[in-house]
Amino acid sequence: MQALFLELQRYVGFTPADEERLRAVKPLVLPTFVPAIEAFYARILEHDDARAALQRGERHVGQLKTTLLQWMNELFDGPWDERYVERRARIGTVHVRIGLPQHYMVTAMNLVRRHLLDALEGPNHTDDRTAVNRVLDLDLAIMLHTYRLDLEARQVRAERLATFGQLVGSIGHELRNPLGVIETSLYVLKGRNDPDPKVTKHLDRIGGQVTIANDIITQLLDLIRERPLGTQRVALGAVLAEAEGVISRPEGVSLELPAGPVPDVLGDPTQLRQVFVNLFDNAVSAASPVGRVVVTVTREDAAVVIGVEDTGTGIDPSIASRLFEPLVTTRAKGIGLGLALVKRIVERHGGTVETAPGKTLGGARFVVRLREVT
Image (cartoon, rainbow, N blue to C red; front, side, top):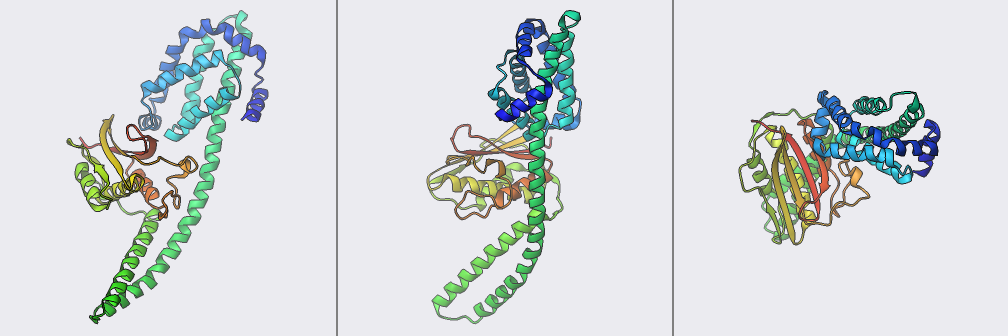
């Protein structure tokens, strides 16, 4: 990060003299901070894609305005060191995570620039305006660097998933044939009514494993094929209750659904049920052998927000950024398909799924946002 900072400093021509000028002119530009912030978000919210990105992000716009005010203060206070770059990069990372289009951010940043420069009119402030332009160029370069890193990571991930899809499509269909032969043979053998209980036991075990293998293949194929959505008004409360009834859990783990009425959402009830079966199953596994899983439902703008939180140990930071990719798992007996399928189904519904810090239980928390039907 230090090497990046020095490189960007040289690139924009930012010097210690600029630092002194920024500190000196802060009282002059301070009155422009609030108008600049309002203009920044007014411009972003003019665009549907950008507005949707902010509304489905981790924070409300009001909280983002507070963060932007802090950012503007640091712009003139410094210190402009490695930690400054790290803080700026985190802002860029938030923009990437919530899906804020890059060009909206750049355009809105230019509005901030204009407000600050307007406060420094006149020949006496030529060097001051240069310093402001340089520090804004420095910040913009850091954020664009974050976007570039994300783009490269997405390209690598897309190539990996494309290869994964080709393999799954080929191998999945090929495996169906031998499994079908095994199922047919099991049917014939069971039809003989062998009195030996050991034979019956082993036939049942074979049948159970065939079912598991078929389920795995189905999940793999669901990740790569476009199953049509039977979109309709969905009673979310009923879907959550059905999902809760499907999963098995130890006696020491409780799963608590919302007590009150739950809003309806727009979607495919069968596929949404699969989303919550997978999330509940993961949460119960994390909370086992003794613990709690709490499901919450709230409204946020035009969305219904479903939180699934557990008392487990939380998400391993080493895989947090890849948690929704196929074949990534922390479960001893997991194969890493459940969360990948959750993400695919939710996004096909026009919603989002993300992780967030646990609010009350201290473990992992998954947050799903779906469109509300009023």
